Amino acid sequence: MLDGVTLSIAQGEHVAILGPNGSGKSTLIKLMSRELYPRIKAEPWSLRILGRDRWVLFDLRNQLGIVSNDWMQMCTRDYSGHEIVLSGFFGSVGIWPNHTVTAEMERKAREVMDLLEISHLAGRYTTEMSSGEARRILIGRALVHDPQALVLDEPTSSLDLHATCELREILRKLARNGISIIMVTHHLPDIIPEMRRVVLIRQGHIHCDGPKEQVLEAGTLTALFGVPVEVLERGGYYHVL
Figure 1 (cartoon, helix red, strand yellow):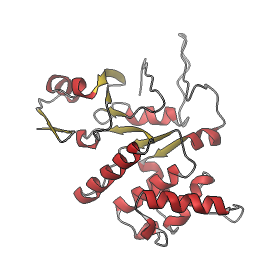
Figure 2 (figure 1 turned 135 degrees about the vertical axis):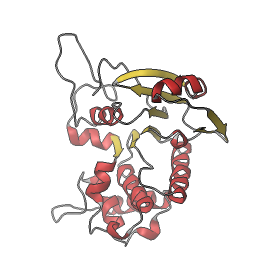
Figure 3 (figure 1 turned 180 degrees about the vertical axis):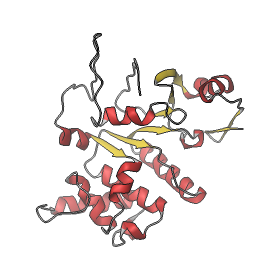
Figure 4 (figure 1 turned 30 degrees about the horizontal axis):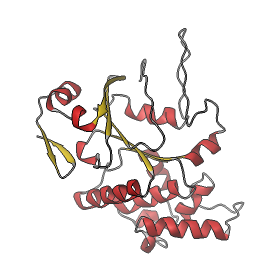
């Protein structure tokens, strides 16, 4: 649960939102995607996304590419990778008989799959893919309609070391291509070098918010997670010891 959170993220920013399990990170993602709404209280509140406080849900989801474990479970079915990516145009899982797939949609799906280096997965069912392969297919689904931002909830969850490294390199590639990335995680190494700002959440409140070099330090992270830690920076990535 979140309580009294004040947070503003500019278009084009790459931001990591970090916190322990149960701190409210996933709730924040669901507020962004309008899966949840703030509870009415006496004091005034506002929730504006891309400058607007009212959205048609389908239109909003064309502007925010959401990649979460909930969507991962929904998309792990007997649909090919190509079908899952194309289904991003329709807000569905897979292509349905009433969907009209245009030549431009086909072109865009191929372009996105090339960018994510997953063209070889086009004909394979997601049920036959590794977790890392399926995660990239889901990112492709989120990107086909050119969203304003890619929103990732625990992107390396269930991935092995090799798949995790591959995914981080893909995310760096996307960031360099100008795609804004908002990432929720509790793993410091998920925070790619292109992310310059880190927001820490603890018990539903903003614990700290600022430049990565200032936020990711031992004292602050010790207070956040409740255990003594040391922080090591190597090659633009941060690790706790």
